[in-house]
Length: 317
Image 1: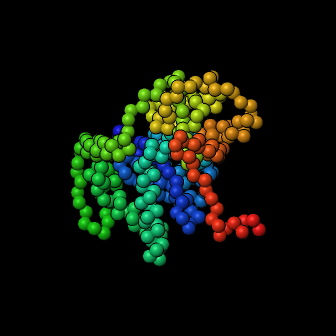
Image 2: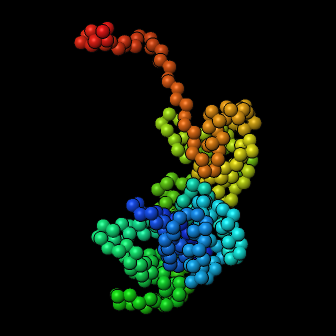
Image 3: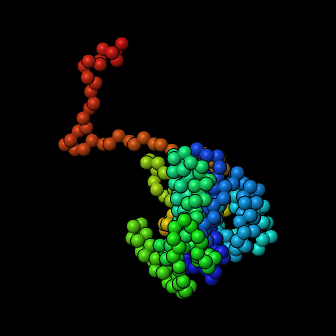
C-alpha cells in the first residue's frame, strides 16, 4: 500500500484494456484522490497513446510521476523522450505483477462492466460511460470518505441528485485513507498467506514458472543469482541473462549457477532455457518422459491386464 502524495495529480497510474467485441482500447488514469479519467485510444503504440495523454495533461497539468506497466506503449524510446520533454518521471512496475498497479487495474473492470451493461441495454455506450463517471466522481469514496471530484478540485460537482457538502480537512483524509489501506493489507496478507521474503543480494534462487503444466515442477531447476533488490522487486542473473520479478516468484536454491554445467546454444535452444529467461517470453514446453514400470512388490505381484475374450478374434484379424 502506497502513501498519499502531497497534492492531487502529483502521482498518477495508467492502464489499458479492450472491451470484448469492440476494437477500441481504453486508457484509464487514476489519481490518489480516486479521480479517474477514461479515454479511448486507437491502438497501443506510443504514437497513438502520447496524443491522448498529452490531451489529459493539457487539462489537468503535468504530473510528477506516471506509473504504468511494462507494455509496448511505455517501453519505447519515443515515450521516454516524451516523458523527458514534459518533465515527469516514468515509473514502471514489476514485470508480470499487476498488483503493483492495482488501483488502475481494478477500476478497469468497473469501466468494462459499465460499457457491457450499456451495450446489453442497447444504449450509446460512450454516453453511458460519461454518465457513470459523473456519478462516480460525485460519490464519497470508501477509502477517503470524500467524493473524488471534491478532493481533486476542492469543490463539489453538481449532479441530478441533491448535493452534500464535504468540508473535511486534509489530515482527516490521510488518516482515513491510511486506516482503510491498513485493513485491506491485513486482509490481503492473511488471504494470500504472505510471509516476509529473506532473499538477499548474491544468493542463489530458483524462479517460479509463469505457465506450468502438470508434468513439470513449479520452479525452474536452473538457479540464478540475485543482483539487485528494490523492495519487493528482485533482479536475478544467470550466465549474462537478467530477469526481474516480484520476490514471491523466487525461492532460495542450494545450487549456484557455476555448479550447473554450461550447455551449448543448440542445447539451450532445444531445452528452451534462453526463451524462459527472457522477461516477456513464455516458458518452454516440457519434455515428457514416461514413468518406468513399477517393480513387483514381494508377496504382491503385479496383475497382468488381460484382453477380454470377445476382443481376441478382432485383434487377431
